[in-house]
Image 1 (tube, rainbow over the protein chains, first blue to last red):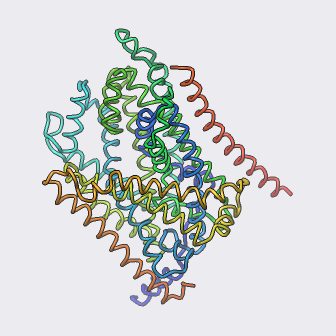
Image 2: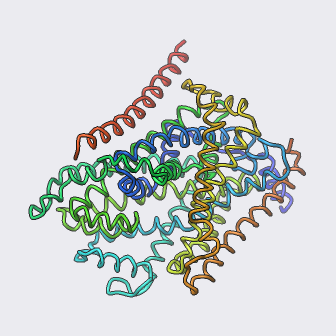
Image 3: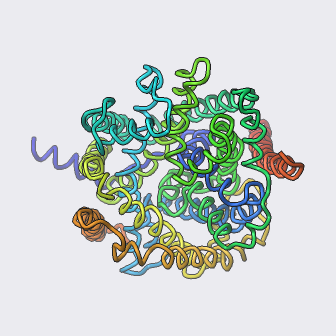
Length: 531
Length: 40
């Protein structure tokens, strides 16, 4: 009996099969779901309004053409290339692109970093789920000031006890529920899990988004006592161009950063999704289609909801103060007050937060998938076992985030993995693709099976302009914030052990990644699967 | 909202709608090509 089980296991190990996307539309929706996240609806409008309004769109579109779209094509092409060799993650993909014994360890970043990001992203995603319930069941009804909603959020997060929440357990329960939904999707696999989520989730997200935009645009002047507070002035704040901001390098950096985050490049997740393509499936048109859906969600829907509605209800000066507090203040403190002032406000509140939840979950499963693919492709782990293991890691890390949030634990993970790490990794992969793998081979990969003819200009953009753009972003961000964060300048003494804890967690995950890669390659070598 | 505000909003929306339209057109015509090949 034991022999039979061993034989079965050996068979599985040697005859590992990978899934493929069942249709092109499923692929595009899943990739768009990966890209469309909370940032489309919260981060974009705040960045645009703070950096010159309509004028912001000039550096934004330039960054889209010279940084975002080229990087998308690079990552799609790399992913499909890796899938050809049954590698769905960057350790294997990098190894096939450059037969160097160390490069696979650099590729570990493309598996570990999305796990680190997902650890805290799941928690933020769980706030959107809980707030959609709170909206529907009028939990925050009666809290009509920003200070009140601030206390509501802070007590929900366990920072301060209040009449709304006396402890953190509600937040923790929603976190566990969110993680359970994620693991459920992952356990179903690519076709039955991720595809089904994207096929239902994305149309629903766009439907909710359009309903909210129509409601916002028909608000007029909600309070006649304040004639300046109207929807046209809201749109004016978003779109009236301030050309003087274009002289400021921070405006250009903000636009490049926004493009980078919104397209979800540099995570390692696009490569994994693209690895489920067949050898000659198009990447050029599909990549561009996913990008265009993301831009629709960001500029047209995202730019038309949060900021205009805040101006219509709070006026210019207060909205500016809210925007200074950051995207989360806008989404979780200001908008719940607005919804209470609308007819059927609980429904609109639900639509807003559930839209954010859909945007969040389609991104968080994408962030988990590189780890899933690594365990399945490189260690030949069965699907459900891999999902349980990834879920366990996310649960342990996420629990730390929930309980240590007030000590800056989440911010530390976000800075190193979610900001600097992404740009650094994107820079490495672009240099590897264009200069080591070779741009001629790279260009051939991008155009293989392409359903559109790409201008040769992109050959040169990918080779010269995109890496330079990334290098400037990386150096500037590191010099602006990196040194202060590295040496924990201005950090309260009580937070220091927690920030070291966050660094230890990241280091432990990275070392685990190295060890697993070493183990996997030993198994590959023994099985004769290496070139 | 100023005239420039309207121009920038309409230009940005049009650019993105055009990009979406281009992709949709290419995707749909590509499907037709495949069908035509199958018919042949």
